[in-house]
Length: 255
Length: 262
Ligand SMILES: Nc1ncnc2c1ncn2[C@@H]1O[C@H](COP(=O)(O)OP(=O)(O)OP(=O)(O)O)[C@@H](O)[C@H]1O
Ligand SMILES: [Mg+2]
Image (cartoon, rainbow over all chains, first blue to last red; front, side):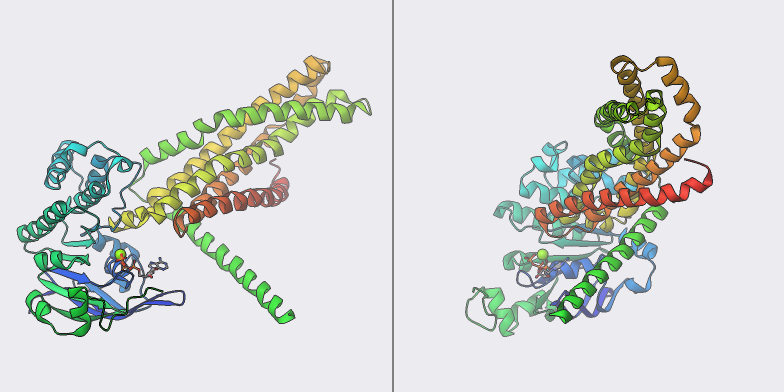
């Protein structure tokens, strides 16, 4: 078994009367891509924010590199967070800054590098996500896909130990999707110690990039296996989701 | 019926107490975070420009017309018992002790407090604040502390400007329009108005700067639910800070008086 990078145990979270996470157990190995799939609204984004310690859990623990996030002081959590890169579902670019400044931001804050070094690194990362032509555009002047790639560049720029992607390809055209998937895979393969967690509901992409796949359903992880085992699973909920069928244990909530 | 209304009152009281506690914690943590490096000089400068320089015109216009209209009204009152020469002292005292700090505070609140609430609220609902945190940056230190500090510095400066312009328009209206004797106007003003009056007023305005910026940031920081949430946070911030300025003004006036300042 590989080393566990992030361990989630008995995680519960409610918003008001709405129970979102109802006891999530998940062990994320170091040096691999774990894809978390699940229906819209099951709490995938909420789970991801818990991994970063952005939201306090109601119950349960989250350990990163063996450290219990909520036993640390705020400053300790912050130090740990500095080793993460996060791609937000809606990019969450700073709209007062252009693309260059957005991507340079984490470096300016944490690297202590000279301006020249920062510029070189930012251009390099922007080129790798295909944004060389939009360096000095403001977020409001970008298309959805470009915003997403700028968010990706910002997460990658410091070579983090943990990379969290919240639906990195939702809303992109098929070619761009394939490109981003390839980039996620390549980033992983170039950095053996990197731990990636990708949230997705695109099954094709999931099978393309995942080392391991976990499925979140009704507030719990119902199956967490390596890619091939997952693909062959005969769990009825998983089968229905993977094949995208209407009939099955998941009731489409159209009312 | 009665049980229900008692419950409703109880809930409302609970909300207010919880809200006040959360605000106090927010304020303390923001100010505390500003004590430690990295110091955000660039953001501070930008905010000082936004709060101070960009409020110049509204503060100057308000100050000018307040001084002018107050001279008229004082003249109306004083002429009833032939004490027109007291206009200068009265208007200037009222300006530096009360009208300058409060009116500048309220005007700047309308412009700056609302903008801070809207800006931070937008950053909250578009996850930009989460993004800051995900990059291991304390948003209170990065966003809130510089805004509060800039306001604490710039609102008194604006108030001093308000006072000066108001005093000048009052002088102009009194001596040129209402034909009060220039010598008597100036002499009485110099005799009755003290530096302490000015200092007390500027101290108050620093507190108003703290209130309007921290309340604006607070409502923005905890905004929820899209554009609508940002809109309502903005409105609430302006109203809450405006009311707070007036209430705090009363108590500050009580507390400052025995100190011999203001
Ligand atoms: N800050 C919050 N306050 C209240 N409710 C929230 C909050 N964040 C998430 N929720 C609720 O939690 C549930 C799960 O949200 P989440 O964003 O994690 O879904 P998701 O699985 O990421 O869906 P999608 O695939 O559409 O992004 C939703 O019903 C949402 O309304
Ligand atoms: Mg989501």
